[in-house]
Image 1 (cartoon, rainbow, N blue to C red):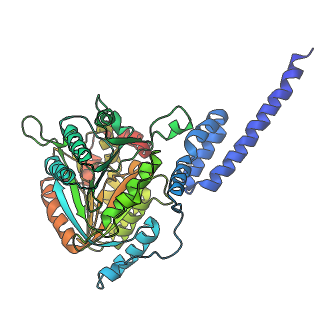
Image 2: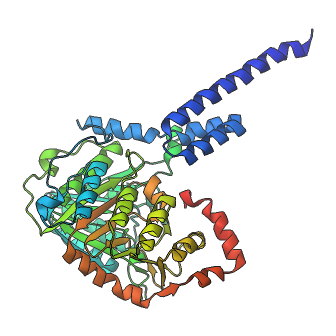
Image 3: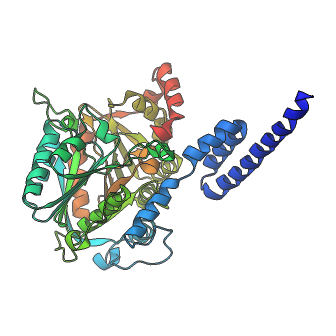
Length: 485
């Protein structure tokens, strides 16, 4: 019997089957990928490494997490977040400020359509300097809670900082307050003792966001919630970029380990934050929040600031935060101030920064001189030359490490929250930010950041050219991995 005659037909069948699957997957890539670079990369993987490429695409290339988010919203009777097609209810910027400049009217319209979130009026926003001030204010608010407390964070360590929060949350629970805590599955692993175990021992209702499971969902373990939100009784809230850990407190010598800025908010914006938390809570396979307990339709105005919540993530139809950053840059006329611990923007944002600088807008960018992730710092510096050459001003802040995430445009528009200026934040993470239209807040924040720029060292094109060759080469190599840094 001819052995080759028996094997050959099976080999042909397998080859044609793989070819057919490659064609079908390629069609799926072309129909679902919005960026040509992404489509080209995935097609190359599928065709150059047929078996590995098909498996890799099946695990990492298909955004099943969007389907989970839609299903979670359907359970709450909410419409899926699809591309907005018309005007929304609620006030516009001109309803709040009849003298608003046309550029901000246009930006507000884009923000309404992209975020599907109303602009809220009558908010107050108070910046908090560092962990000691922020933590004290947050714990005081928890101790004053009468009805509900919702806490969502990326890192929540069971150290001297975290245990204060655990104790405050337990006291609230003992008073009969409905307490919910959501911790990211990756952030929960920071430190030796997961805080979720401690919270459960205290009887506190806690969930982990997107935990790893031995299934296809393991592919999405890399998609994590980076949001930091605390909501009290539907009327007071805190958000920004600050995690809950001792690193935000002073060391044993009284020196500040990390510099950061958090924010206390009051007013209608808090209900938008609770909506974000409710989505995440349901997304984490938890029971739907009771609207009679959590929804407050009679929130009193906390101030005069117009603000909008920006809930962003890989389950959204747009890269919301990036689009609003780009729109704000195109709206800038005088000055843009950016503070970010991780600054590695993709090409669209780079183009907007360069265009704004070439229009004569003063672009000031402040990043840490010594990053807590040295490899990220090397990669970030490798992309700075084109920005500095176009006229952007780059400043390096001296220690301690500055974890602040802030953007101010013309002293009128302010953006703060959890997003960094990198692909991980703007594409992969679940993030929460707030945009504010208010010249008083804008001027306050300009004054807030002025000492940081004054103490920083400005970097010139020659400084970037004279970096060690090894740093430049390693930086460009790390730049290739920038979407995952």
